[in-house]
Image (cartoon, rainbow, N blue to C red; front, side, top):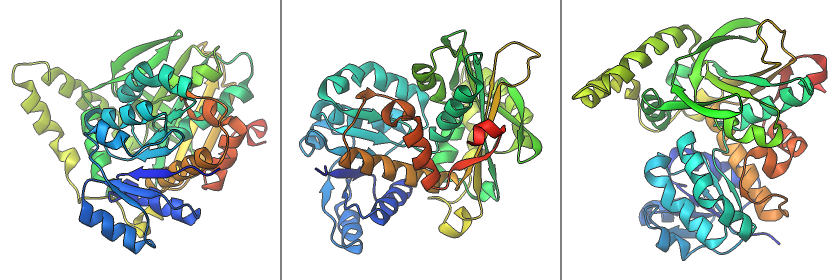
Amino acid sequence: MSRRIILLGATGYTGGLVLDALLRRSAEPTVAGRDPAALEALAARNGGLDHLVVDAADPAGLRNHLRPGDVLVTTVGPFERFGYPVAQAAADAGAHYIDSTGEVGFVRTLYDRHHRRAREAGAVMLPAFGYDYVPGVLAGALAARRGGDAVRALDIGYFAAGPLRRGISRGTRATLRDGLTLPSPRRHRHRLRDERTASRVRPFTVRGHRSSAFLVSGTEVLFLPETFPALEDITVYNGWFPALSRPVSLFSALANTAVRLPGGGKVTAALTRPLLLGPPGGPDAALRARIRSNVVAVASTGTPGDPPAAEVHLEGPDPYTLTGELMAWAAQHLATRPISTAGVVGPVEAFGLETLRDACAATGLDIVAGPPAARA
């Protein structure tokens, strides 16, 4: 039996990409948001879709439209500001839930608040199910499995090729700006510890070249140990602009020092304001087609000097197209198939590694390099 898919934020940039991907899969989602005119126009342009006028800040109002087993997909962020009422409504209704957040603090709180209730209701809650952070989870899981029992550490790097400077949405720019003064969780000796964002810089080999990346947040540190409990250390890096990795590390140190001083918030806002410069919305289809995403996972014993136990490289579409495709696939999967694991879970827990790998390959995200065993 097919369940309803309700897409909150369908009139926004990322929501529009998710909607397009759902329609290509012959799904007919209910589009939701707070602007009646925009929703009516969107629904009419797409064959008369059902639409709901709801406010993301009103969990009771949203809850009234949800039934147990519905699939609520939300792209309304920043999630630390707007996400909690939406997740609360899904948990209260026993509905499945998928979001596009890149905010790991939000994911941690979601688990604390709703994991037990979602499990009792038989509902799946999938936070951060897009470019943030499905590719890293997949690459890390493949590398950990291929590396075998000796693997204790994972280093995961996100990279991109193409005109990325012009290909970053306003929402991503805002997240990058906020992230410079927020800690990044890193798993070390089986425990989560918060470290200054960009406090670590590491080189990776990407497409045959050495590229630097700096420490960032990632849900890999939360979810991969559920599948691979022997993992002691997991660190996530961003290498979108490799040449800027060390300058960003210094800039992060300066911003984090300034924010703790009297009046430092204003100083930090001024220092990071250039990150917000750029057009509204996000890159169009022509620009997205020129950008490719790359993710590298290096599995090791964790002992300095030991060679990598396994290395997996993934390549796929640009981050925004990939997010739309992944969220649409997950929504349709939850709407049409039985679930095996309930609660606030990661991609591998929710679907299994093989199913996730095949789904990612169908979106264009596939293994392109690594040891022969990793390509199998």
